[in-house]
Length: 165
Image (cartoon, rainbow, N blue to C red; front, side):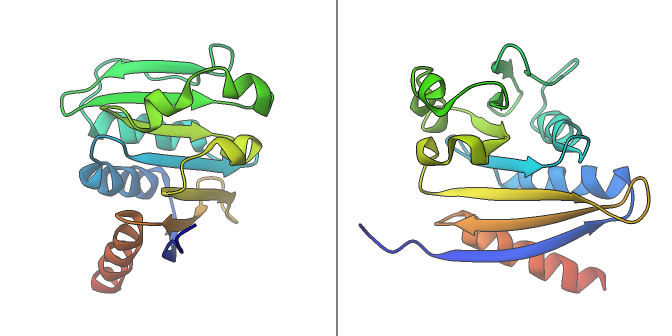
């Protein structure tokens, strides 16, 4: 098995607007087959981040958590958006959903609670962990790019942070 490059960065969001800015930045880099995995406690902001990402892809209307439907498909202006929430299913059940069709398809995919189906995830992806900050709207995003292009995404975010400081 080939060695896959990794790179990490941290994005601190002081408010919801900072979260939206991060989602927009990442959506601007998305291509068909893009996979972002989200993990974090309940209420950490996984769905809010997903909504901002979808909006940046030009998805019209409301994007809500697919908690009970597992997968929701949206048509965006730039590409389809696939939003998954795997909190309520087992890895075996997830394996039966044909996730590879989404992961390697024509759209961008976000998987909430992704660590629950780790063995089924593509080897290259952007893994995002969201943690609560000290204030009610503060969040800490720990991003790990696994393989290309996600390693370069983390490098670009580091450059963007450096330019803002």
